[in-house]
Length: 284
Image (cartoon, rainbow, N blue to C red; front, side, top):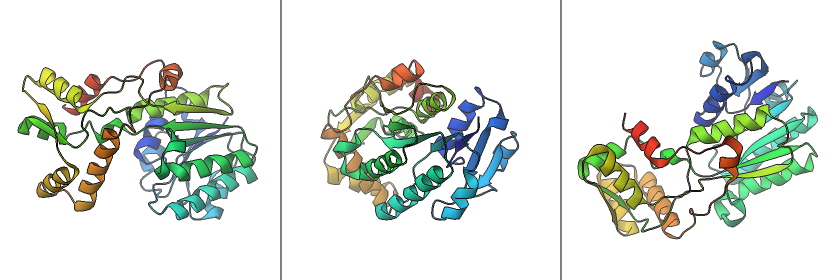
């Protein structure tokens, strides 16, 4: 069996490979990346490296040859129509090479999210190939919320959002990567869809309470307006586009669009890493 991982030098792809190395020999893994230089460390582990670009169909045909299972990590392209084309290039190459199983990193509850229609289009494209598939409908990454910025919250004594009491179903990138590694190395996941989110969502009051508990310093959550969050983030030096994106995500949370749950991740890997554990790790 040959397992091919696209986007292998990205944060998710590299984490998947680390989990795979605990399950199968390096000789069974093929890492596909746009830059061979960035993939040099993987080559040092005994993993075969192949270069490909989602925009170049011939490169994909060469990179996916002799594969058995493909982990197709979605493109990071911002232009959605171009992203659809890129994904179609990957799907067509997989079909032409008669791969036995396509595992695609989709998005949780995509049917209800207009920003995830690219993922639905890709899922339908994969279905047309008649190749067995697994759709890993990943939720948002916990690392967007739990990261070194926690130290700033501690310094200020507050977490500023416009999220209100909205809850977050995000899970750690490592947990999602482990789920992918399970699917890639086990049987019985063909033609299934997994919604990989937390079954124990949290809100920013919970995050503030955990920070207070583990640091001994009182931290509170302040919920303010969209415009005030954006203004304050820009004032701290954050680029305006990123500040606006952050405020938008908080609004999404406030509107209850990130609180839906599923037990799929728990069933697939047996656990999900709790918020407190991730906070402690981020503070190290």
